[in-house]
Length: 185
Image (cartoon, rainbow, N blue to C red; front, top):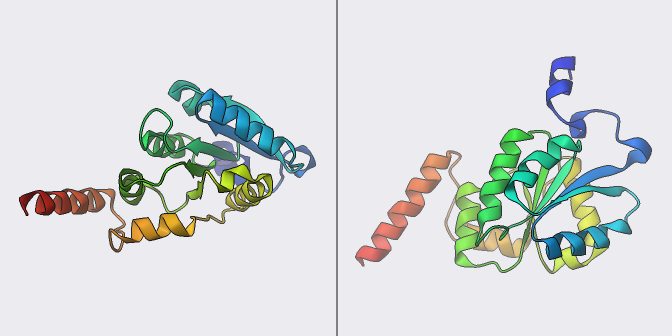
């Protein structure tokens, strides 16, 4: 990469890792979510929780302020599926920071929001996976290195909407048309 790109993109894309090869992680969610996940990740030698955020303002600032390589976000932070919209904004503001969503209950609303607003570069894990330090560490490590992973149940739920068009506008239109057809029936 050239020097200009290195200045814009956080360290995930640089060749050198943080001291000792540790990946810097920001956690975004309620205080309880943040504390539980931070305690879980403490045991992982190659991960360092550099910040937690329990407000949208903190969440938007933390990845760049702390040079995070990964932001882990509760899907339902701020309301049903609101973490997805926050993830989009963080992704735009911190393009070198990988995004991982932790999905509590996979409702139809969450699946639809992921299908419409989710990015192919995000990893999505369930809250059950988030209870295992080893599973979270493996998923975070993979995502930091550009390998995304979406749990099979989430993939199945999203597949119910059919092939995913590349354009956000096309996805929104598809869902709108489907809702119009079902309300007319």
